[in-house]
Amino acid sequence: MKTLFLVRHAKSSWDDSTLPDQDRPLNDRGKRDAPRVAKRLAKRGVKIDLIASSPANRAISTARVLAGKLHYALGDIVVDDRLYPGRVDDLLELVHDLDDQWARVMLVGHNPALERLAHRLSREITRMPTCAVAQFTFKTKSWAEAGNATLATAALESPRKR
Image (cartoon, rainbow, N blue to C red):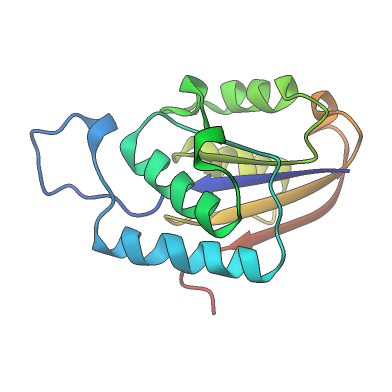
């Protein structure tokens, strides 16, 4: 079994219009939502073998909050340019290229690509608000088969969900 977590970064700030898009930080809501979602995942006992993040500040900040709550070493977060801004085919290629030693992988990136990939993997997921986490478990031993393998479960966690 392989479990994939797709995480849309937490809400970002548009306050400083001079900042390049990649440098935008989390806003106050994002700083509240990321720990809230991370705490829920930790409470469910979620364990992660690999966290990969977009190089954008808001995505890395979200990944760091999640890593902290899930007892994943901050220094082990991998930055992957395919996650920014992201295209569905690039994200699927990233998933297919994952080392099979990892059973549980979290990708932190951006819409619309994450939402489109989530919908491709499960028609049940049609929308991913900021800081949403889509979780997919595939009946396969190889990441190269993810997306084509039987989907065992699909779920969506969002900050507004109680």
